[in-house]
Image (cartoon, rainbow, N blue to C red; front, side, top):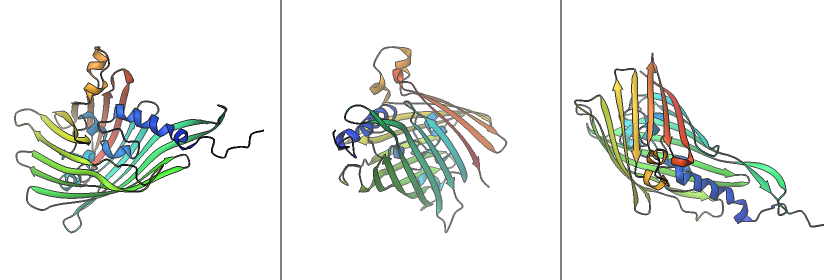
Length: 317
């Protein structure tokens, strides 16, 4: 009888779910394929998803707090909750709370949990042995302030933990950002260096790479249309850039329609069908009722399926 192996898979086989997760997220993300800490590259709200993830210069909500922390210096105080479902049973939940100013600094906190689902483990003979889960937890603290009447600075630090059964990776990550915002013209220009950090421990070693890059964008509420437009360029991997475009139509104060797209859509197209043509594009609906706002977003992935996100938020006095 063969002795029981306490670890039925060697490291490369036990880590195969990481490869699977990284491959899936390479398809669905507007950022690079990185198995660790994927939530760093996604909008924190359904509204951000609906606007094509062009969130680095948005001043309406906390969708872009992880990419450009300077945005929280000018967005209204609020709390937000969102839930997003990806393909292959992957889902995420995020909460954002913009706090009252302290000595001219505006703090904000965010909690983001990424659940990659459950996997089936097998031994060397192919027999099922156990189920295990994988996921990321991101705890973020943000400080931002106005350094001039129209110029704001922000810093964000995130304690990130990624788990895959018995394996755990930990890192301290952050972003630095600037935002120039003219409240009269509603023009906002954002520049940030996002997701730099130090890996405390990795699945295999502390030498696993972390992804950082620049984000540059602008947004504006058009003068003669009830439309907010946002355009953003992000460095996603070794000088590879992605361009994102989004907008939100305002029908009064209670109804909003959003749309978005990015150059990632060309990576998702495999056939010349309508579904593939809409790959990488998004649509969304926002409804304000009394003091609460409800947002819903759908993002197309071509033949791979859809991402669906929903959220609720409230502005605070």
